Length: 160
Image 1 (tube, rainbow, N blue to C red):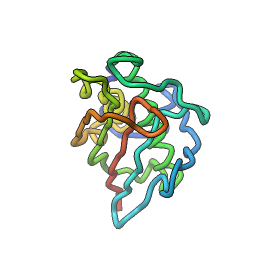
Image 2 (cartoon, one colour):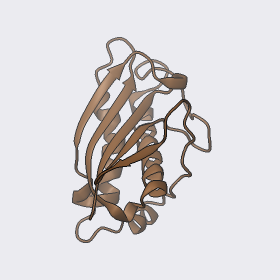
Image 3 (cartoon, rainbow, N blue to C red):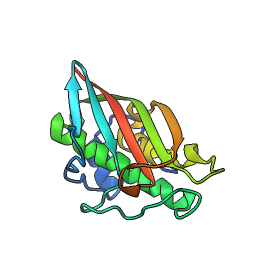
């Protein structure tokens, strides 16, 4: 588990401290945009765990993909969401991570969705500290696009 940052938050410095680089925005796989601003909020479309344009794993969690391997995939989804936010408004404008919804392609009987989506939640906490604490849903689903094991969408409130 990554410890949240305390004190003033510099998401760029925190990403560097974590050894992470913001990825380029992942091109949409259908008819939508990666993120949209409406008023004081940014709504980030569901992000798959693409790394350099490829899915590092496919299949259902609890079968082809272990829960232990799926949590870092959820973290990658969150990192991709941060890339979309950066491209749209810049991470420096994030006032609060409001809501995270995580989808886990789950094998029958798999009930560990919350632990998988912790991969995303912990990254937001490490990058934004208290600002990264959020409401969340972790949902088991039968299938995800392209056979991805996880998908994460985010709602962010912006600073004035």
